[in-house]
Length: 102
Image (cartoon, rainbow, N blue to C red):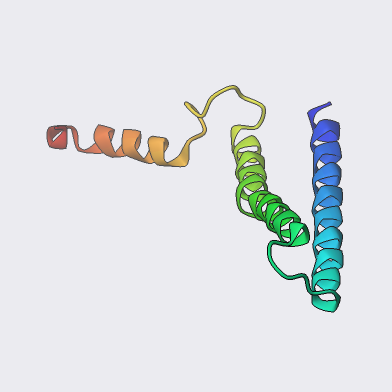
């Protein structure tokens, strides 16, 4: 069930990113061909769309990749207590050298 949700979210995200890119390109062409003196509403709209596009690219995609990595590491468990590689290393290290505990 979660895989299906993940696939749907990924598909929606890519569609949104594609739509934003297309709209930004359309606005760029319109701004280049028709210059307006003073404040241009198209430039404001383009700026907002660029922010949304950047937000998706810089926040959501890395977060999704991080989530996918966590899901692969935990193998369906609710926590990392038995799967966290660094934690296991430290536990083994403390068992080997008990005098070095702080």
